[in-house]
Amino acid sequence: MHQLTIAELVKGLRNKDFSSVEVTQHYLDRIARLDKTYNSYITTTPALALAQASAADKRLAAGNAPALCGVPIAHKDIFCTIGVRTSCASKMLDNFIAPYNATIVENYLDSGVVMLGKTNMDEFAMGSSNETSYYGPVKNPWATDCVPGGSSGGSAAAVAAHLAPAATASDTGGSIRQPAAHCGLTGIKPTYGRVSRWGMIAFASSLDQAGILSRTAEDAAILLNDMASYDTKDSTSVDREVPDYTATLNDSLKGLRIGVPKEYFGEGLNPQTAAHVEAAIKVYESLGATIHSISLPHTNLSVPAYYVIAPAECSANLSRMDGVRYGHRCENPKDLNDLYMRSRSEGFGDEVKRRILVGAYALSAGYYDAYYSKAQKVRRLIKQDFVDAFQSVDVILGPTSPSPAFQFGSKSKDPVAMYLEDIYTIATNLAGLPGLSIPCGFVDSKPVGLQLIGNFFAEAQLLNAAHQFQQATNFHQQTAPGIE
Amino acid sequence: MAVDRSDIAKLANLARIAISDDAADEVANRISTVLALVDQLQAVNTDGVLPMAHPLDAVQRLRADVVTEPNERELYQSIAPAVQDGLYLVPQVIE
Image (cartoon, rainbow over the protein chains, first blue to last red):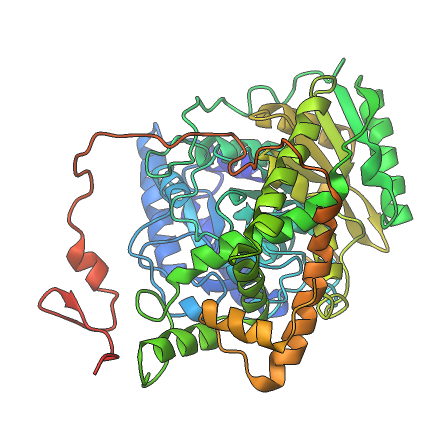
């Protein structure tokens, strides 16, 4: 049952091949038996899952149930879930039980989707390797001595190890696409504003976007149909009709103009990764697409701009974690300052503290113009590169990450080396564009990701292009070794 | 730009994060590495470019000035460590 895609689960539940309780119990058993190896879940919710599954079975029996009714998925622990611990993988929120659901959680609840549990992640989504979680690192099912990627590493490992058929995730600088690449999955970050951020614990508010990790583009389309919505509770949510993302999956790619930016194939790109991306370009040509060489001249500035803007926003967002209102509180504070200082110092991990300090520096008097304002200007130049490129192409194609999954500890001592992991993904967050990663090959038996970037709100086109690639290839059907 | 121990002490105080004396040098080094990366921005000509705060250049929506949320005081207080008479109890920090 755990080999079935979301599309197949939807069909099987309708045909009464199995019940939601059976599928849910099957996944709960697998998690209990196998997740010791991967550490992909922080919290599992078996009793709640079975109650939701039982309710879903009743809706299915009564007819008129929504498409996803009875399908189990996992939620990244960044999304608030009522009555269930929402830790964001931080000691700070280890004891936080949210009194409400994030809008996307609520959307899925309305659809009868079953929650298996909350997946592991980098602390407050800060990391590219899932090594900064308070609950320990997540192991990559393809190579357990390697990272799954971050920050949605738990969601990616859970899906790759068949401990969930799909999972929610979030992407601030590549946190959906990079783990998708490292774990051989499909991962989509929608356009900023397409999916509500309400109830998603904020890291960098102008960059964060919720999305999906799944095994196929078809599954991502089915799941995005219910995840995307206009939400009056999120002032950055966009009031725009949600199309049926499955309706255009089978459209022909004849005449699709694909732009290949030369800046994505420079120094630092693993040659074998490059070869697989080149081979993917040939697949697209055979499907009728035309390939165009393009330039995104400010690409090399996306990482430096990001590492001013994201820490600046994080230092503001995380100021609410003060020992008074949320989570961890130190013992016996001697005064108010001591309460703030010790609660924050005890509650936050090293990477979070480092980013808060960089953010405080960038926003401090005397440096605001030199760093923050400058980075926001460069951000506009980066966005303009894309706006110009989309005058002549429909989709932009390149690698997702410079190289396949790396070993634990190999980059954690050098923050800049770790930050460069996201060099191909960050620019889309700065610009607010949708991006997607799909598997396109293997290097040393580890998956390689192909990134497709779309124009604003062109998720349907991205999913169409990804689905057509998956109809012509079988990379997405490969399973990590040792997964029964 | 490199930061030193005294900069770290000032920043740590601003951010309400304690950095021990033992860790100050290492933190200063690691933050200096990140700042060296972001210093690349200084070489870019951004004359006449407006700072971009939002990817879609959206404007703040307005809504009618009416209460839309129900009173959830009991639910919200149910997760607090200590409450009394509808108020949250926090440690005494002011003498």
